[in-house]
Amino acid sequence: MTQFFTEWKRWQEDPVFDERTRKAAAALSEAEAREAFAGELAFGTGGLRGVLGVGTARMNVYTVGKATQGLADYIHAARKEGSAVIAYDSRHMSPEFALDTACILAANGIRAYLFESLRPTPELSFAVRHLKATAGIVITASHNPPKYNGYKVYWGDGGQIVPPYDKEIIACVRNVAGYGAVRRISPEEAKARGLLVIIGEEVDRRYLDAVKDNLLERDLCGKDALTIVYTPLHGTGNVPVRRVLAETGFTNVYAVEAQTAPDGSFPTVASPNPEDKRAFSLALALAKEKDADLVLATDPDADRLGVYAKDKATGEYLPFTGNMSGLLLAEYILSRRAARGLLPERRRDGALVTTIVSSDMAKAVADAYGLTCIETLTGFKYIGEQIGRFEKATAQNGGVPDGEKGAYVYEFGFEESYGCLIGTHARDKDAVMAVAMLAEAAAFYARQGKTLWDVMQEMYQKYGFYAEGLESLTLEGADGKARIGEMMRCIREHPPAVVGASPVLAVRDYAAGVRRTADGTESPTRLPESDVLYFELGDGWCCVRPSGTEPKIKFYFGAKGRNREEAQLGLDGIRRAFLALFTSAG
Image (cartoon, rainbow, N blue to C red; front, side):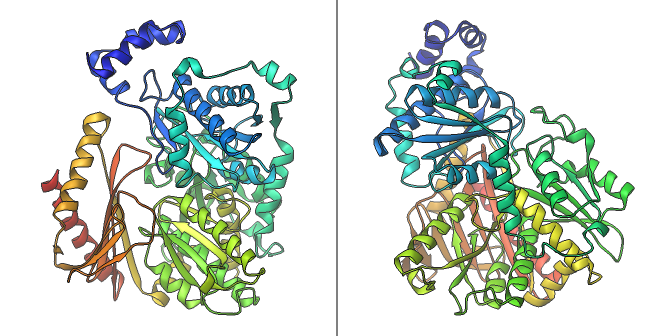
């Protein structure tokens, strides 16, 4: 009898599962059961994430409960007592998972601070530090389709868990002796014992104050002349985003009313993802009606921001990629700080942090302002981790910044997937903060007669014409996972010498931790182990990795040219040639 069949039968018969779950398990077809019991959910770049439903490979109260029990065991192993903050988004089952998580932690003697209603992921990151908690948990699947939910774990620094914590926690989860070993108490008992504390407005106020403290032009005139259209895409951003805009003087803000109510079905969009242009259809229609200057969208847990800005020459609304919005924010922040003499006195003591798959323009921007550009693996948790390292090194250096000793001043961090962090109030990407700063930047440049699109074109003239792209291939289920693994194995064992017309100058294999040049010279990558292959080309780069949070394999590309057309032409050539390699490998 196969392992999946044994588990499937147990979920139908074992009284540890409630009657509803047993009936749902019995109603599965064999094909559905093979997917539902195809191993166990594992922590990836964003934590635990999967399709809702019965089974060991699905998100349900039993798999979430086991993960929470394992986390509780890990907290006890790390220290005798502890606490955790819990937040959740608008997805199906998010409130239920959050409350159950709190009750499991309470049953294990760990105080749970549970938000009274849905809150953004960046506020959870802030709250962990604000409340001096041992850990944090947010129930979210970010921008995934409605059938998904997830469970992201944060540590006491406010950042998502990174190695070795992730592997140590999952080891504790695996050591939990079955679903019957999960300890629970009722919410009433947890509250009576002081182990369940409901939080809300006090933390909200502190968080929004921290956001506003990062702004550079609080008294900037003309904010009332800027018209903004905003949509939270049925997620958590509606209240905090509109509140911070109002409190900072932006009065002409129009929300897309059909998308303001939290709704885990996301009924008005094909995908609640600000990277998807279709998600902006209602917002763009409202923008044209109101003659808006700026159109903004946050994803369901409000850590990613999508942007459209008006082109003054044509009056059309044009989209910013995550690279573009991140770079524009970097330029605005660094230029204003430089004008005020707020950047580090010595070159290279400040840091602009980004990821290996983000735009190479980041290096040019960092160099222009005398900063060091530090690249991390994909996943904002690695950017957040750098902040803690900078702070620790600075403390060891007597509080004095010194880039040569790793004691950098964090100036800004962003990744290509529409996420950035301004300030150090949180340790994860923060779309609420990004909205506030981007609105300020738009008002600042508007006083000079420029739109954000105008400023972006000026940056290309200043730094060079860079172009980037991303393609994803979705392969769901156990068969899809196996196919992704085979594609990575083939390309790793048979790396190309050329990609299209571009010679491969070096290959970075982050799983092996090695960079190999075309002449065979090897050097360490000096980044954590990860299933990522990066190809340095004569006129650009390309990269491939399996997603840590979705059933996808992702392909990234970048190129630079003497003008926009040349950069795009180079990018298109790299894209076609690189994807063709995987067509043959798959």
